[in-house]
Structures are given as structure tokens and as C-alpha cells.
Length: 288
Image (cartoon, rainbow, N blue to C red; front, side):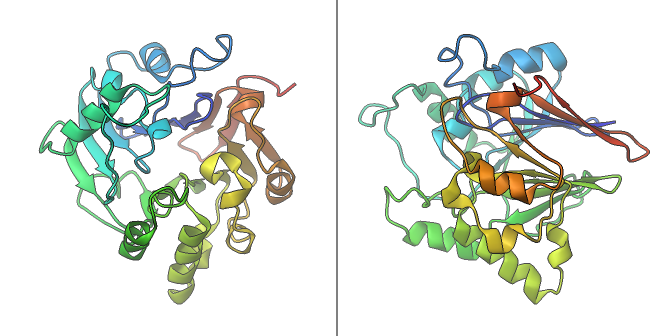
């Protein structure tokens, strides 16, 4: 059985994936808004303790170095984490000078320690189409982005530009028994153009087709790339977004051939795929 959980964390992202290989994976984490919403939101640590108690984490993937994608990292590392995926960037923060607002500087400190790690976790910076003997290829994870070109673009972009680190966000394609999920991270429009150009040149735009699409950047209109997304042709779109924050519902409702699920309306959203290729989506709430 393959399971993916899109957690209702609010503004940020947290996707928990249980592979049939028994390799538990987490893509991003955010617990920064847990106390804001009358206990409606899901604390990723509490979720893991309930659903996967004492389970080691085979890989943690940080799509990009924004705090709403790493909040809770320090507490997460109370468990053993074997692999940590990061991106090549030039972001620097100083807890003594920078305003962390509701974010905990301990998470950034933990992140800096991980960057120097050689084992438990093994620290990796990966690019599009990277392959290895183990283990993301075995789990049918394909890296669609970033490319080295996008890393260069990020470094050329001025600090303060909201797309600076979104340019190099991971975009992942995961397939099990013929069912495909694409995780859009916070990828910018330029990143999606780069993905399109690459696979068009390879005559392989079919690689973009997916049954489920996690909308990039919490469904923000600023990250909608209609000319590329039309090739995804998703049945379902999932949007991780905080209550009171608008997303491009009208566009995504058109893009999804069946339904849009948002965490703010549907709570945690779980996808299960059986070994026979039968897939089901279980929203925590009916959306009302």
C-alpha cells in the first residue's frame, strides 16, 4: 500500500509519504500556525506520533529554504533521519538580527547543522533527472526541478524578490502502479517554463501528466503557469492553504477534471493506492 498525506498545516506545506518499500518520507514541514486556528490545524509532529509512532524517517525533502517549509525541523530530528534533500542557494539568516516573527530560530539552527552532516542524515543536493542506485529511483520519485540553470537564476535574483528561492524549489513526480502525483513545491513560473522547455526538447511532455497535482505556492495566482499546467491534466488538485487566504480557485477548479481539495476546507487529505493500482482520496472533512 502507498499512502500520501497532505497535512492541514495552514500557510506552509507538509506532505507525508509512506512507500511500499517501508521508506517513510516527508516533504517540507510547518507547525508555525498551529496555535492560530482554534486547534483546527494539524501539528505534523503529533500526526507522525499518531500514525507512524517510532518510525524512522528515510528521507526529508526541503523543497526550498523558506521558513514555512522547515518550521518544526528541530523537533522532527528527535527521530532518526537518514537522508536530507536540500537545494543550492545563498540564503542567510541571523537569529540575532533577523525578525523570525512566529518562526523558531532553533529550526534554522538545526538546518545549518544538517548542512554539515555526512550521515544520519546524509546531506544531498539534487537536480533534475538525478539517478542513483538507492533509493529515490526505486521509490519511483523523479526530480522535475530544479535544474542548474534555475539555481543560477535564483542566485542572480535580488534578495527580497519573492521568487528568488521559489526558482529553485523541488518539483517531484511520484508514481505507483500507474498513478502519478506531482508535488509543485513553491516553484515559480520561470521554473515551470524551464521544466516545459526541458521535456519538450526531449519530446517527453507526457511526463508532466498526473492524476493528482499539489498546486505550487499554496495555489497563489503568482505561480500559475497555464501554458505548462495544461499538460498536467490532473483529475485532482490539492491546495495547501491557510484559512482566510485566497488562492486561484477559479483556475484550479477548471484545471482539475474531477475536484479541487484545499486543506483549509477539507483538512488533511490522504491518498491511498493499492498494489493493484486502485486509488482513493480521503478528505478529513467534506469541505462545507
